[in-house]
Length: 160
Image (cartoon, rainbow, N blue to C red; front, side, top):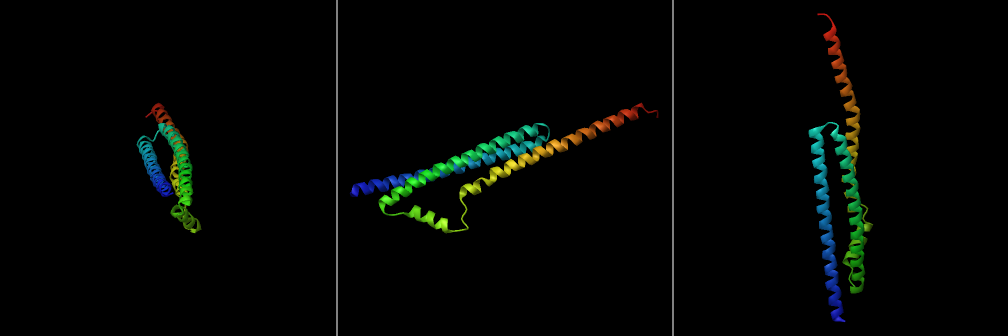
């Protein structure tokens, strides 16, 4: 019986380490997506021409993939923590379960996943705004340029 309890504790400890490792991978993934989006925004600010719309589309795709990854990690972590909680009940100590119950009673606690989703949504909204601005502002610029060229052509035909 004592060996079984030791084995359960060892499995519990391994599961906790694996959950921590998954959280670290999640942080690394979020950092990667932030870096990609900042690089796209830098390229957009540098180019600011018709290619900008394609960069905005690429940014939207990256944000969509980012949200899918966030959701995937949420499911992965939920499964890992459920396994940990089940092991705790077999061991007769439930620190992880107790922590989640305490957090569940706190109105100020926001799930990390809900907070994480704000960043890709903010980037996505930014890409939409930039694309709309690009479409609406670029056309008046082209029209103004064409009007200026037409005015120069008319002036060139007028006698001095």
